[in-house]
Amino acid sequence: MEIRNKANKIRLFSLKSPQMRVFHMSWFAFHVCFFGWFGIAPLMAVIRDDLGLTKTQIGNTIIASVAITVLVRLIIGLLCDKIGPRKAYTWLLCLGSLPVMLIGFADSFETFLLARLAIGAIGASFVITQYHTSVMFGPNVVGTANATTAGWGNLGGGTTQILMPLVFAGILMLGVNEALGWRLAMVVPGIVLFATGIAYYFFTQDAPNGNFDALRARGELPYAEKEHGMAQSFGAAMKDVRVWALFIVYAACFGVELTINNIAAIYFFDNFELDLATAGLIAGLFGLMNLFARTLGGIFSDLFARHGGLKGRVRWLFIAMLCEGIALMGFAQMQTLALAIGIMLVFSLFTQMAEGATFGVVPFINKKALGAVAGIVGAGGNAGAVGAGFLFRSESLSYQQGLFFLGVAVILASFCTLLVRFSPQVLAAEDAAYRDAAAGNATPVDAIAAR
Image 1: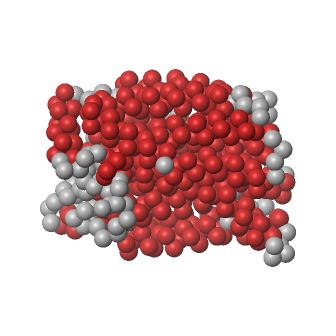
Image 2: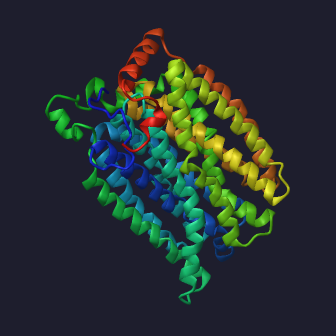
Image 3: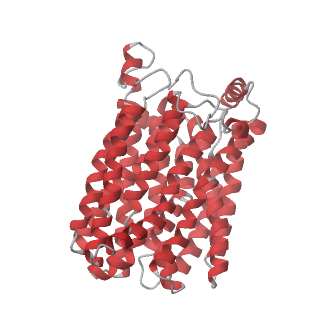
């Protein structure tokens, strides 16, 4: 897909251009999705007692919350190519708000499991966010744009850990008991999701020159049929070994983040004998690193590209992944609270930089099948979370043991970056495109500054 008039600067404090409206609406929409997706996680200690859930059952609900997203992410990328990211995001947000609000009717393990399964679909919002910024921003800043919008969206995982216990506490102050309180608390993110979906439709457009329908009518974009159809796009992405290498890499970074979002609060609650609010606050620090960490991953990706081209982007991805695995193994060994928090922040930094670095590479794999590539790689994150979920559902395996094994898996996954290679022709073409886009824009760091 060749889109004209992509932005070669990120004017952070401007909403005048369609590119910057997409930039801000996409990260906010993804941020809100985290409220619905993981809003239940910091309340699990209360829900566990209310519904009488075992550790295995809690593990099954965690797996359910991310498993369905694998399938939906595969579909949503193709849907973006078909109807455009604007309509895709609107439908996902509005429909996704329903199970978020309705989870309050769960009265057993089975109904709670089904509700978390349905809610997991909104995790596909990530693919739309990355797709939309990829078609809006040029090669000199696309790594930074993708990483920042995704990072500020992922930040929702941290703010959810902090705010949902406060929402829950506020409801309890009205005289409601805990069993009803957690149910009412989930209505809040559901309403916000629906309102954001409506706003996304009216305040964004599919591409710099207009919506996909208009571009196709003017002959500027091929219709999503025949050689440009969904089946052909998906088939091309499926046959590319680089796509599957990035699938594994993303499973080992974003999949790990999803896992930590699900278990961090209850991990600190049980292991360090903290109250629910304090455990949620500490767990929230992991996600709050997204305020800058994933953006750093994208900035470094663009900087490495400046000096090493696409090979530089891949080299940086390997470094970030390797450091993530080492830090995770260290976190698993911590026995004191202060040290656990400190190493968790280091681990979080490299995890989120690796995520940003991954989607600093994705836009260059196959531009004609961008939606399919983004969908498959994005699905890898949730596939990783599903796999990791099995480590934490076993009654015989402690959380610390599971985290250590997960760290070993991340280190092994980092070597999959060696499979991500580009032909000399592509390397030369992208180097030229980078230089053209960067003409007059000193560095990616300058690009993210307000103008």
